Image 1 (cartoon, helix red, strand yellow):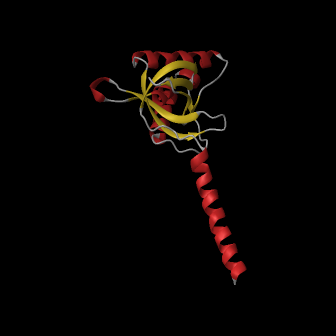
Image 2 (tube, one colour):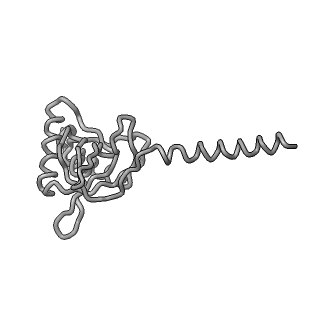
Image 3 (cartoon, rainbow, N blue to C red):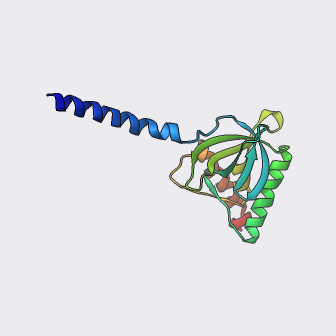
Length: 160
């Protein structure tokens, strides 16, 4: 009987350790929404920071932009112009951390008349990005699909 009790205690302790280890040993994604863009890396990746010096790399959720091509450069310039028009202040809605350690997130800025501007939607409507199904559900994935349909109908960017 005693060995069964000890085995039960060990099994319970092991279960608790397995369940709490990821919580203790993972860096939490900050739910702080407002960040300052420090760098536009490419058409779908930025580095953001806060006044305390903390920084993170953010990959825009739900989209894919061309890289190393004419449209890739245009996507980077479009993203840079969105950042500049937002005075480098963005809202980050984190979804997950990818295998490279980047935060995958929706990125938005405050627009005029309190209408938020989605960086993903703007890139999609310009035909400089396409929707990407990576198994991660972005909160505004449906809107991304509609933005891409606008670009396709307008025959703009990669949809010419």
